[in-house]
Image (cartoon, rainbow, N blue to C red; front, side, top):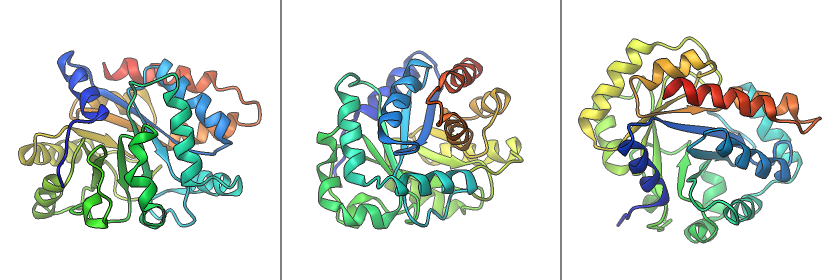
Length: 265
């Protein structure tokens, strides 16, 4: 599938020019509600986030740990749909046309909305990460042709070198290196293993490599930023959002993100 530069590519290039590591922040759309998701997206950016990763709620999110699974459940109870999320992105774009947005979700949701996904760039979506398809596949393999969307792939510590090469060839935007063996929210980062694997990935592609899963503290973020091109914060944010959801007061979250941003640059 033909591919052209997206807002995501332009953001990554602009960060590279100033030798800055990318900070990607994740939330589940609709948790605690869509209005809060919109507020949080803008708040994340104001706190120093470079790229937004928006989780699309699904009934069986197999790659997620208990924290994010619970967020998916809450969002589904709010009847959050992919169409709602496209509208969320569109509202965000009314005042922010610069920050890239990645939709992260599961294949059944995207296949059920394939036509809308083909047109999703009209709402301001820049990339898709489909968790439960082989990394060697891209959107075109699913019949979703949209040259405005990057196709992000996950690479795990257990992925073979042969498969890594194939994944690199089919991906665009960046590669997402999973720093842990397990689901989101796990612990016990192995920096040495991550560095070795990221170095091999870099030998196979010119795409940047971001690291995620298990990053909780500024020290975690600092250590992984030294061996990657950017970091992804997920479970810790989702947990904080849930704890603050009844008050709808998210200042602590923004302060946490500012500390992460300072730690990696």
